[in-house]
Every structure is written in structure tokens, then in C-alpha cells.
Image 1 (tube, rainbow, N blue to C red):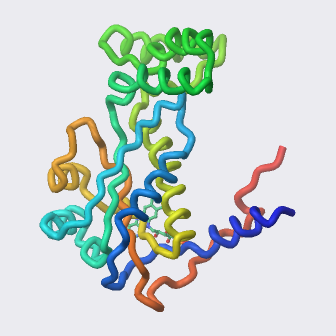
Image 2 (cartoon, rainbow, N blue to C red; image 1 turned 90 degrees about the vertical axis):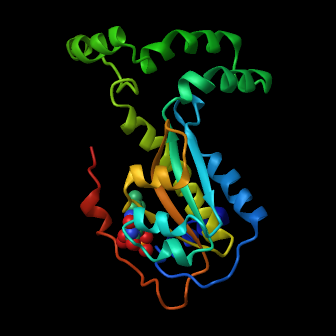
Length: 232
Ligand SMILES: Cc1cc2nc3c(=O)[nH]c(=O)nc-3n(C[C@H](O)[C@H](O)[C@H](O)COP(=O)(O)O)c2cc1C
């Protein structure tokens, strides 16, 4: 077995949700590096809809803490990162991502043309497409396989993409000697207002980042592996 796998397993098992932080600053260059690692998560069609809002200042902490159900980590952590999903990633960025991949030789013009053909089917939500995707596709599914369409269940699709970036971030932070608290306990509209996020950015996860106050992150348990595997 490779050392890389051993190291990775040790890292994953070492990470703990950290609810209290010491008052040590985190180097901004390190935060950017961690975000750069988070960004290398895979995404459907390589569309990369995850956005990061980075909070290091103090001014908005009271409003943010209130929006996050008064969780103390919002005040204690030197850095809070909001992992947001861009509802307009397809409309605003698809051509840019395709062009970058083409220029890097990471895709072919033929595949780009294929994507240009199917992506409207996956993403477009104008009233007519919406109608046939929601009303007609369930019947088409009886005769041929149709994948889940982001156009029909967009928040579900976006959440998948954003969480992969977030997990990369939690583990990268752990590898750098920092600790994190992922939080879903927040009021979406209030977080959006506190940070003055663009309207099409939806906060999906709030992550506090810093150094754990010693002795405040007890080791949680996991279900026995066999209980959660279905073998066929
Ligand atoms: C999506 C998600 C949302 C969470 N939200 C909160 C939260 O709002 N507040 C909190 O204290 N912990 C939160 N947690 C942390 C979990 O309680 C914690 O991960 C779980 O108890 C397992 O502990 P461990 O991460 O230390 O292994 C969240 C975790 C995840 C993955």
C-alpha cells in the first residue's frame, strides 16, 4: 500500500469539527493556497460553480454570527469562508471554462461542440424548456435513461459541486496544521445580506478556519462500516 494512501487516511481520520478557536491570525497567503486547493475539486462539466467569500475583518462578524445561529466559532475563528454556489455559472462562465480547457489541450473541439449541444438541455430554465423538462421527461425516462438535470433540481446539483470543494478545503486546512468547523446552521438570506453577496450566489456551507483551542474537539464516532455498505 502506498505511503500517500496511509498519509491521506491519517489526515482524514485526524480532522475534527472544531468549535472553539484560539486568537492566532492565519497567514492570508495560506488561506489563498487552501482556496486554490479547494478549487481543484472536480465539478460536473468542469463548470466550477463554487464561489468563496472570505471574512477576515471584524466589522461584519456580529451580523454574521447572528445569521449563523449565534455560533461562537464565527467570532473566535480568525477566518470564516462562505462556500457559495453560483446560480448563473452556466450562463456566465461556460464559454470561459470551455475556452480554457481548449487552450490547454484538455479537450477537443469536437467534444466542445458535443457539450454545446447537450448543455442547454441540462441547464436551460426558460419557461418552455422548464415545462418540457418537468412535465415530459418523466415519461421519456420510461423508455430511455435520462440523468438528473441541473435545470430541474438546480440547488441539488449546485450543492454537490460546492461540497466537493468544501471537503478539499477542510482536508487541506488540516494538512496545513489548521482546524475547521463546517456549518450548515445558518440563515441563508441573512448570511447573504451580512456579506452583501451577489444575488445569484447562494451560501451552501460556512466554514470557520483557525487553530483549535486545545481539548475542545472530542473524537466523534462512525457507524460500523458493514452497516453502511450494500454489496451486489
Ligand atoms: C454539512 C455539515 C454541516 C454542519 N453544521 C454544523 C453546524 O452548524 N454547527 C456545528 O457545530 N457543527 C456542524 N457540523 C459538524 C458536525 O456536527 C460534525 O462534522 C459531526 O458531528 C462529526 O464530527 P467530526 O467532524 O469531528 O468527525 C456540520 C458538519 C457538516 C458536514
